[in-house]
Structures are given as structure tokens and as C-alpha cells.
Image (cartoon, rainbow, N blue to C red; front, side):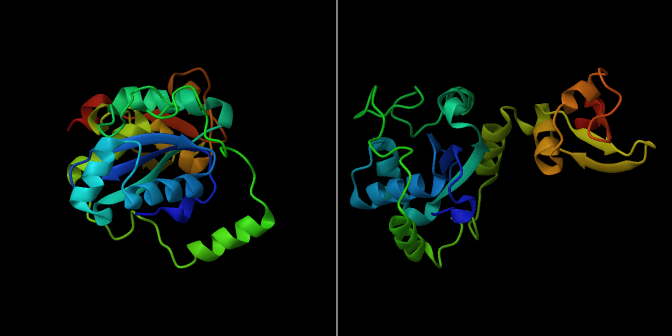
Length: 217
């Protein structure tokens, strides 16, 4: 169930039931630590999200995976978490307001954001050795794949705008399924200005949106 590939990243994550695509959405300043806390509570049988706990008891740990959805600044966590919650309407979240749980409404976890000592880091590293990503080797239903895609982009795949990358000589390089994917893989920011005609090129490349008729063919 673990997804340690993302280590201590700050951002938005999902706990998804890979069998039926139902999910829990959360935000954290340390993805590894929060993942570990969730699993510990679920195994102990007292997770604050009662629907998630019942599903965990029914389907077992093997049916679930942690997925890191989006990296963002700490000050934007609640805003970005709420955006994704409003989009996917996560079944397992007891409350539909970002940043709160039934037992901590209006509060923040006592240790949220507190840096670990070197001894704590070493101890945590020793425990984590040998663990692999919770998504690795799992069989994902098509419904689950679509749910994660929507959570990451905010739009179903058929409604997303594919982006094509060209050299300045107009030689085709690559096609991306979305603007978010193009920016993430190339590190280019401001692609939207290029495809909307404000700039001729961005970061040394020409960017074009794929026509909708081509996307739906």
C-alpha cells in the first residue's frame, strides 16, 4: 500500500481502492510520514474516515494504493486539496472540507510540519528500507485509472486538450495528453500563452493544441 517513491514531498495525495476507484483525498507536508500514519491507523482499526476503515477491513491492504497527485507549496495545500475534492468528490472522506477530520475540526495535527531530528530520520529510514511503491505490481481497474487521471488534471481524458511540441523550425517532437503533462515532463511554464497565440514560442519550443476533432476520432 505504500508509495515511498515520493519521499518527503509536500502536496496532495489519494488513497485509492484499485478495485472500484473509490478514494480518499488528503494533503501533507511529508508524503511518507502521512502515508505511514494512515496505514498504522487502518491496521489498528481506528482510522478517522469510517468508510475507508470499513473498506480496508473488507478488501484488505492489497486493494489500496497511495498515489501522489500534485506537488504544491505549503501555503496552497488546503486550496489545492479542496479543488481536487470538489472535482472527484472522494467517497471515503468523512467531511468534504479540506484540511479537517471529524475529530480535529478547526485543528492542525500537533506534529504537522515539525522537522525530524537526525536520529528520527535514521530510524525512519531503517524502517522503510525494502519497501516499494504501493502502486507497483497492482492490477488497476479502468475505472481507477480514470479516477486518478481526473484527480490529477481536473478533467476526464476525452475533455482534455492534447499538446504538441515542435522545434523552432516547426519539426514535430512529441505529443502530450494534456498541458499539465507537457509542463511536468519538460519543465516549461507558460505553455498556455503559446497555444493561445500570445507568444510564438515558450522555452525554445513551439507549442500547439491538437484539434478537438482529432482528439475525438
